[in-house]
Image 1 (spheres, rainbow, N blue to C red):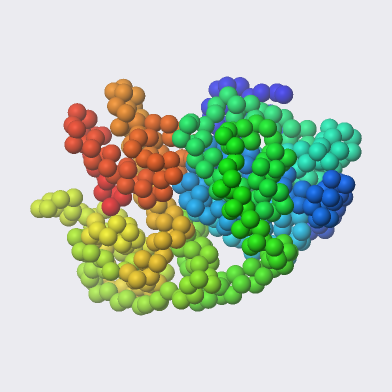
Image 2 (image 1 turned 180 degrees about the horizontal axis):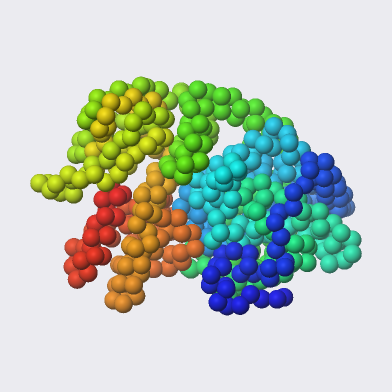
Length: 556
């Protein structure tokens, strides 16, 4: 394989060029619906026939596709060797949504093989997946209305498709078709095309040129995983995620948990994620998932979910949230937080169908919407405003109040104070007559919403956005001071700061006083505690103290 020079590797960290020569990388090919459907049908039928073996007919009582599903699911476990994927899932609380995580993945990849790309059902799946990835900070909105994976995450993102492809190829080998045989390679080509095309629907814009380039990328990335293994903390995170989702995937693969791991996982992944065995407790969970899935057929389930979601999209408050989200994304403002609230509304449908209250608020010139020091009884999604809003903050009692920001709709206000149950840390007012169109989340609704992982992730995402305003300078000061002094607390603060501002590649090996299963909110609280302790201990440069104080103020 032709390698890229080491100096370029540093500049291209996280991109495909770190693992592939430029001539092996091409823009994602554009396929017509007819070309896509032809490749999808050929690959799907050929794979189904390949897994129709005597073993599978006997073990799965005729439902031989279950074995193919088992190998496909093994791909998601391989991605748990990737630190950034594990860190992103934890930061956005994917750990606590095992069933939802697998259901969404099942519909996305299954729908890619089972449904036409232009079908309403598949478009709905792609729309929600893109929303989730955008909230997670993995993709950014493009000017053309689509999404593009961020550069530093490109190779990791591509490896997700790679892992699924290789898991399916191992399944072909287990069923008697060596992947490197002429027939094996002929079938691997359309499988590669389908999986990379599916990844392209959610932001991957460049891919390996062909099957041979795919294999070179696979080998280079696998070497990278072995040479730079995840920190102990991230490894424990990955193992916890695996334990939570393996009962679900085993039920879909029609195998016991132990047999699912033994047959479908590659040995390296199995040893990494389940070093001490699976545990009998997981079998009970698997049997419960079997009961849940017994009457569900994949295509029927996808269509039923799509119909139900379409009704929610048309609900007036959800439609307003969607318009605000799209506007915010186009203007690069408060889009991730609004998107997370929108996603929560979609996920909560059926459990809490009450629409959010919509209210018009008229402010006179100089009138306050939020007053610093007063407790908030509600938070607002400001859909539109006829004039800008101004944020004023007084650092301490007796100090001069100063203007710190000017806000334009759409924007979310009051969520941090509501979350912490603390008085507002700033005043928000209008300097001229202003009419606001807002969605209101009162205290009762907030108490309900804050229990949901999606809403917790929304609050953490806003903290990340605010912290990111000073990421470069504060992060550099923290890192340099921690390295120079050897202060373990500062090293912990530096990693928490980078992690919460969206850097999924941070090792998390220096974090102290935080459990491995900590939620984003607990990470924020740990950062606040450690910053307070570091300042109180003294001995820090004045510039660093000032920026650390800004961190505490920023996160409320």
